[in-house]
Amino acid sequence: MSISSLIASIKGESITTGIDVGHHAIKVARIEHARHFKKLLSLDYKKLDANVKSNYEIKNPEVFKEALDELLDRYRQEGTLGDVVVGMNWANSVLADKMKIKKVIGTENEANIITEASKRSPFDEPGVVLDYEIISTNDANEQDVLVVAAKEAVLNSWMGNFAINGVTPHALDINVFALTNVFLSSASEEELEKTVAILNIGAKRAQIVFIRKGSYIYTRDVQNASVSDFLSVICRRLGMEEEEAGKILCGEIKDGYPRELYLNSLEIAAEEYSVAVELALKYYSSTENQDQVEKLFLTGGGASISGLVEFLENKLEIKTSVLNPFTSAWGSSEAKMAEHKKLLFDPSVFNTSDEFVNMMTTALGLALRKL
Image (cartoon, rainbow, N blue to C red; front, top):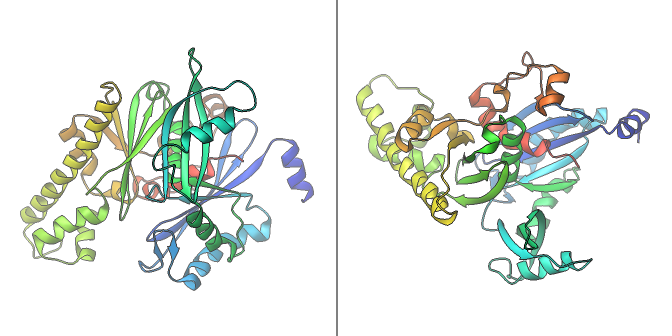
């Protein structure tokens, strides 16, 4: 450990590097965790070809290594990489659920939580690794416990992708927890008292995260709500390739095609999309004593689809916006950031547009985790 690192450690300072590997890019965020505030140091990404990654398998290790090295080598050389937190996507191999488990007095409580969780599907399957966090305990000595399950083979394989490239992850985290971190780092006091949902629109999958009064509740997959699903409707309607349809989602309308036909196709796609989201919201309400979502946040690449925020807000009659932590008005004042526990950043250095932040949000949430 260098002298500067030792001094930083004594002062309670550290750096966390969050790495989010998507289907189309590797995204990296670095945050300094000081005693009284968190400061954004860097946000960067490197595009990947579509055939490099499939779920948790790296199909083209050489291209992956080259992209990872380009993003991290500078910080390795400077000794400022810090603690590395690598993201894993909510999927069939990685799940989480909130359980109510009776508290056992004494040192047996941890063993009891694992035992009780292991009795429930899918946590009872062989080869599954469990972890947990106690959220709260009520007067009846019942604990609300967030239990995470992951297949050990998947964990080892995913960690191995980084180890062979000279990167040792200090922790793995799930993308939906990272998004929760971003919300908590930027929410107003009023929002922290509400029930909100974060719709993560990825290239191939979509999930919705429910948060009530600042506490994670659960996550649910949303079928037919990924960018690919949205594109398939437009491709089918207009008889075009996915790449060309993707430009439409970004608001580009090609010369020679009737504008009305384009807009009609977008509206039909958005209509089908809103049905999928509405079903997820109704399911939440039916399972949580009719609790209603008061605000919906969009994130992920699909959050940049032209007009989607406005369409969902009107259709669902729920206030909707992009999850952008840089919209807070605290500027770069360390005193104000410490007072409001917000993320410190220099607005003249970082791209804070919704489109860029939509892509980088998960990496940012991973870096917000202090180890």
